[in-house]
Length: 114
Length: 111
Image 1 (cartoon, rainbow over the protein chains, first blue to last red):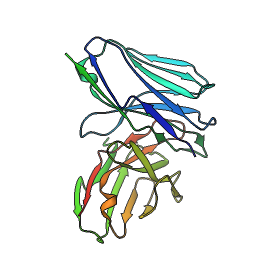
Image 2: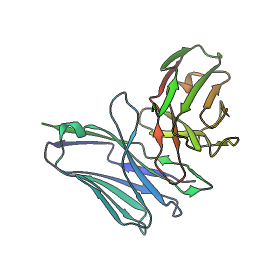
Image 3: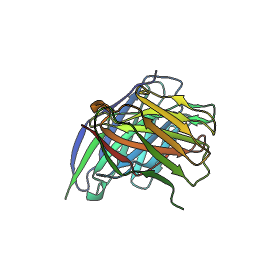
């Protein structure tokens, strides 16, 4: 089955720096790659996603890139702010039969220091 | 519009006790999911329901059962709780090919 590996497990940056989180997946049939942000004690919330027919997607300070050949995708956060501090999860799935079975990475705890 | 709701928020069980976690969504989504979240392991899919009347096993189904009561509601049952089931449980819902929306979670402790 699908396996998703995420690195690093913790990341500490200074406010204003960029942060990069990387994930690799095993199933070449995967076609949907979301990123979720989870603040302490809260539910995961989608921040950006990318489908396999696209190589890059941006939304303000957040971007995701996908390399299907190498089976890896990355989250890039520019101009980090203290409110970006949270745990970030990548996931991969195959849209199939009307449902979306996500397999998550283990998460990256991002700390942004003022 | 409440989105995805879960009850209870917290629960403490003794080993061997049973309980049902409730989940409801008001977004008219067809698909619903149950995950567990353990420290350092991300979220793992327990069961999912692609549509009303269907359920299927995910990555870690052992020790759990589910019921898709109607389009809105999807419950998770622990028949005989074990300490290894101590976790935070999240319910989610989605339309096909769109993002999953998560509920607020249930923090379960089994002693």
